[in-house]
Amino acid sequence: MADSTAGGPAPYDALLLLSFGGPEGPEEVVPFLENVTRGRGIPKERLAEVGQHYFLFGGVSPINAQNRELLAALRKDFAEHGLDLPVYWGNRNWAPYLVDALRELVDDGHRRIAVLATSAYAGYSGCRQYRENLADALATLAAEGRPEPTVDKLRHFYNHPGFVEPMVEATLAALADLPEELRAGAELAFTTHSIPTAMADSSGAPDDPARATPGGAYVAQHLEVAGLIAAAVAGATGVADRRWQLVYQSRSGAPHIPWLEPDICDHLTQRQQGGADAVVMVPIGFVSDHMEVKYDLDTEAVARAAELGLPVARAATVGADPRFTAAVRELLLERAAAERGEPVRRCALGALGPSHDRCPAACCPNPRAPRPAAAQD
Ligand SMILES: CC1=C(CCC(=O)O)c2cc3nc(cc4[nH]c(cc5[nH]c(cc1n2)c(C)c5CCC(=O)O)c(CCC(=O)O)c4C)C(CCC(=O)O)=C3C
Ligand SMILES: [Fe+2]
Image (cartoon, rainbow, N blue to C red; front, side, top):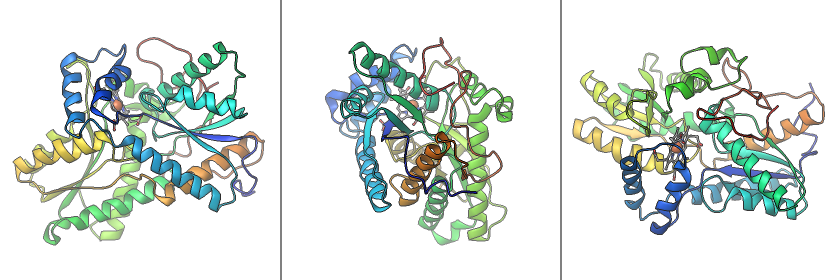
């Protein structure tokens, strides 16, 4: 089959890095949280508590700095591979805002934009919500009388080797952080963002067999990545029967609404009682070491482990790893070839196969009320 990465980026004339955004000073924390939770029914107490997580770090989330680093790494990767495509950056919840990035793109003359969301998996929060925000931004530009660009979201990259392989290496590095005598008996706790179980169950495309399994495509995709990493770690360490589990973190919402469990802290307690020598936490749900990692794992879960006397280590996220930036380039060139009608080779590890290019209209529904979303059928 033709090498899908050889044909250049046409029809795309720009890439937009689309992320979550985070505050960069104490005065930005509350307005940021208001942006994130508008209309979401998050209890006031939970918001005050999450605000404290940010204040503990001077009101600065690391996420924007990490995206600046990723942006620079993508530009470097593209330049080194002769890919002449400008890269822009905008966020859903904080400056630089998506709508401003899109306005700049259009004013610079770009009309066909590929979008990389910094969220690897299916689900309302990680996929449709990004596309709803794209639709909102497109509507704002239209109301301003600007020409409307076409935006295409690149497929989910959770099972791309450029995402999985750096996490295998990071897991091995975290194991090596533990005292040598604990390494063979150390368990792996793969962690991701908890979401309401109803949101998980409806995640993925309606015709995706994973959608029919408990937890939908969201859980199936995480289990796939966890299994891939566990297998690679078993191969590299020679410990074939190392115990591993997918667990959750960062739960919010009202207590009577069921969210995915177990929580990482409860899991650590349970495994300490179960006789684990040590636990390596592997945050497969996140692309960079942002606040959900720095607070919920490195602060809260580490404190729980210390109380329990359970040794823990934490694997780094992918961040701006060169294998990840190369994967973004491949995904972009792959999609460009597909849009040109050429045959493409889609890279994906494991059994689930590559995700769809365009989400069907009924993919990952909004749990509250349907809203316009971009980049779908
Ligand atoms: C699946 C998922 C991802 C991964 C995919 C992706 O990356 O998009 C993710 C990422 C992130 N979540 C983040 C921060 C927050 N998420 C919140 C709230 C929520 N997240 C949810 C889900 C997810 N979230 C959900 C179902 C809610 C409940 C409210 C709602 O239904 O929307 C709240 C409100 C307070 C609270 O309740 O915790 C905050 C502050 C940050 C920024 C960190 C930083 O600042 O460094 C990042 C990267
Ligand atoms: Fe979140």
